[in-house]
Image (tube, one colour):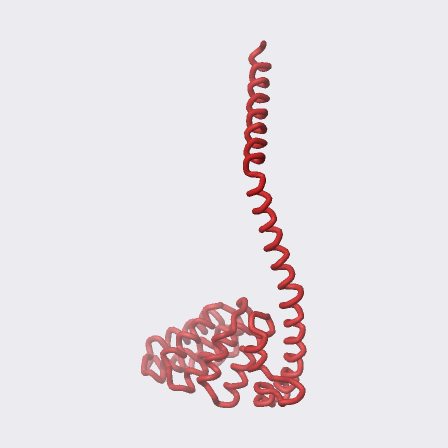
Length: 225
């Protein structure tokens, strides 16, 4: 037998041995394997059932409530949008609580926070704004910035700055200069002109075409005295 044929023969023997070992293993643990496979199938079916028969209907109901609340929000009827009208819909606050773990409940928390801010209830605004969790888009960055605004209203300027700088850190041409300027103004109120200058300089150098950059030299001159 040639070396080539001998090699093929050896490989076939290895395959046959592996198959024999696998068959023996399956035969020995057949019941256990069936139980494990059955359990996996059961878990998958349970997850699909929960998603299709629990979460999807809840999300649809939540969306219906959101639509009604958003209509009042668009009309600046923040108290009604927040609390509902007691008859036709429940409002953002209850949507966030009653439809937990749905996308609409997550969004309702942000809307509730905005409503509380507009109503001057800044502690509640922070509470609900902080519950919102989403990808880094305009809305999520605006929520972070509004949390900073709420802390400013409460006189907690150090916390406010951290939120403004976090919002500015997303490096968006439109949003970042807005929050850099807010951070600069708070630094000025704290008599920290060096950090205020840094915020204003970043606007001037990194976002020269932004509306905030149009008169930024005035702010720079103020802190460079």
